[in-house]
Amino acid sequence: MEEGTKAKKTVFVGGIGDDVDENVIYEHFATFGDVIEVQLPSAATNLHQQSEAKHRGFAFVTYSSTSDAQDAIDNMDLNELRGRVIKVNLARPMKTPMQLGGNRAVWESEEWLKQHVKPLDQSGGVQGRNAAKQNAGGELAPAEDGNEVMEE
Image 1 (cartoon, rainbow, N blue to C red):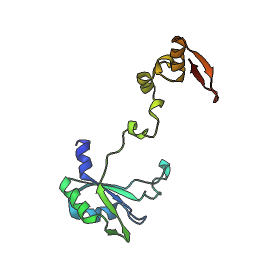
Image 2 (tube, rainbow, N blue to C red):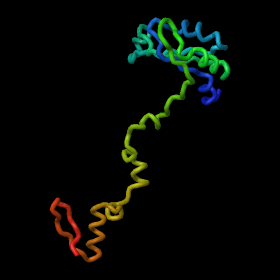
Image 3 (cartoon, rainbow, N blue to C red):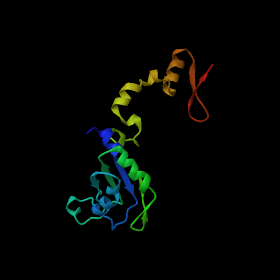
Image 4 (cartoon, rainbow, N blue to C red):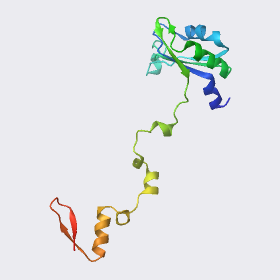
C-alpha cells in the first residue's frame, strides 16, 4: 500500500484519557468501517518500561477505505469518549528526517554554503566594498563609529 493512500485511510484521535486502551478505541471506531489497525503510541522513553507506561493521549486508527475514515471523522470529531471530548481528523504523514531539522538555519548546511556563499572580496559585504573602493583609488578613513568610510 502506498504511503499517501494509507494516510487518507488513517485518522488521528486526540485528547483521549488515560483509561482508554486499544480495545476501547477499536470498539468505538469499528462502527464506521473495517478497522485494519489501532496504534496507541506509548509515553515511555525507555523500551523496557513500555509495557507499564501510559499512552501519549492520542491514537491512530487505520481503515480499509477512505470513506470509512471520513465517516469516523464526521461522526466522532468533537464527541465524547469516556468523559473527554476528542478531536478526530485525517492523520498527517510523519516528517522526513530532512523536515525534522526545520528549525536549523539553512547556512548551517555545508551544501547550502558551498552553493550560495562567495569569497569575501566578491560578496559585496563591507570588506568587499572597501576592497573595491581601494582599487578605485579612494582612501579609507575611520568613521566616528569605528567603521571605515571612503574619503573623496
